[in-house]
Length: 210
Image (tube, rainbow, N blue to C red; front, side, top):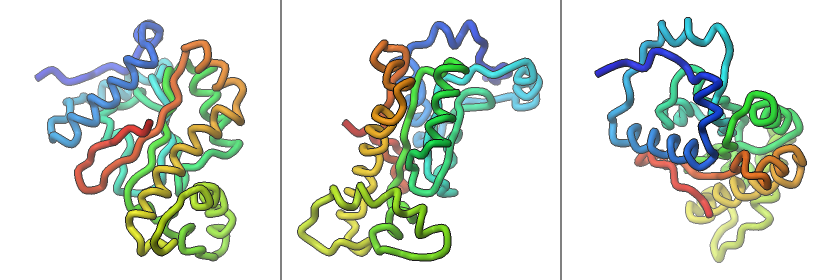
């Protein structure tokens, strides 16, 4: 089997579409959970990357160590930008990073990636207060406020917890469009897509959200 030994070129990036990039990431995720990752020559890729970078997408993920973003999408050096914060929420710095990725560096896709049993979402549901964590968790409150349940409104209610995880992804996709005229315009022109999904800790599969 030949190893991938180069990173994406500008010419290759130019030929990509938002739809093809999304399909590529989902196919990579399928390879991951089926345990058939592509083989890469990282030494050669490091050398290839010294002349520049042309990533196909930017992924906003939680910091959770169980969700290694490049690995779960089966991507290598130079393939994707990754922005991480506990609870995978948008703020000014992350929006700026996304704008750089798409408007300046030519990425075709913005992917908000949540995951099952998220500790940040659990803490927000349980109203945890601790140092700077208190302020950080406020970013997840809109998802909590917009999630209904007939049961207990805490992380003990697993169905409620997962509903908040999904709502948090959906709201942050909406926030990107609402708070970044640059990204919203790029999407309206068909130059990028802004999407969201949730990673299953049990299976490794990423489920897209409508």
